[in-house]
Image (cartoon, rainbow, N blue to C red; front, side):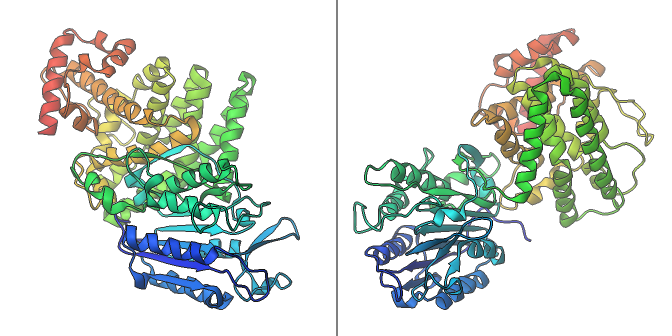
Length: 566
């Protein structure tokens, strides 16, 4: 699949409202709900009339609904969005292992399931859509059966969500609830009444973003707390981490102020609904958390980590087989494969650092050392350089987590890791510092990460990529929210200053450290690190103690920062 853009090409919608039923009791406000949703999409969000398929009463037969559904599936493309709204009857069928929810089309009957539309079916069939974002809104009884689980309060970067696929759903009630057809402030159901308020701007975040997530949050709070309401909306995502953005054009100017400086926004979203892959990950994380709560479990934890290392190395060795050439597709494939095979160790190293602390420092270092490539490699310099990306991911994760937990002993241990000057591939390293050599080796491939940001002109694309990639993983475990930005910046600075000190000690006139996003930040503020928050961290770690002239280093490092930006 082509890399998704930081924008939408087209918006599609399927809107269904049924008041008059062939075989069930009639409703009063469903048709007006559907018409009101169509109006706000056209008037406020510039949806094209021809891209909206609306089915009212007799038009909303099962065949017509499913045909329209599949037509939009075929019409929509990678960078499109699709909204599906249903207002009408829903029923709960109790049989087998668990209840099933169904939407009732105009000609449906409760006695024949074949005349109904399964909620699970239309959610599963979202896999047929190429559109990057789909938002289901179900104003029907028992529509909460479409949800398996939802959590609250995670944060994600806006630009990142625009480039990721997402499938989200908002339901009028829980799985065991009927919902009111009336009760709204206008001629709408109580659910759609608050939905319209949200779409008309009441659900905007503090940064002015109106997304599916912010709308779902707004509707949930309003409906569940309304004294006339006896229903509690359900919401969440059932695939991907993208988010449907309604007012993209409105906020686009803000996002494009400076293509070199990242003006991204952290916004709160609901959690991902459980799926098999995430369930397995949650089980792994929860098991490790429980084991880390008791120091007697050290051997069990060690065994789990050793097994994960073996699994990683088995997959990693496959990536080392073909390093002869580099194309954009090869780079993307390598990076995504590394993320996939590293994810368990990444989660483990975050947990070991935060919950295990110094007791597990040797295990933390073992993970990093074993993931670090060794041996003789032949092929493209860029492809060989990319082999060090999993190690970089783990080092960043440990340092960010250690800073969050104020565990400076772990930071010292990581920075003091050593490597032979002549490695297994007979490559001569200028230093025996593991960290210094690691960031020297990864530098050959860092610029290739620009392929992940086709619409941006980032100076340091690998750092931008790491910034976005690590945030949801760390936040889901540690729930650090807005603190992530400062933690990441301080981690970048810490690595840069440490490497600069190492190089300065070998050559008094040579001041250089790995560059990154922090260059943007310091360019617009103070470049004297002794006056920045990072200085207190450097002092606690005793890094300045290695220098014969601390002030001389600080002055030269400020000069390095200026040259790096300009």
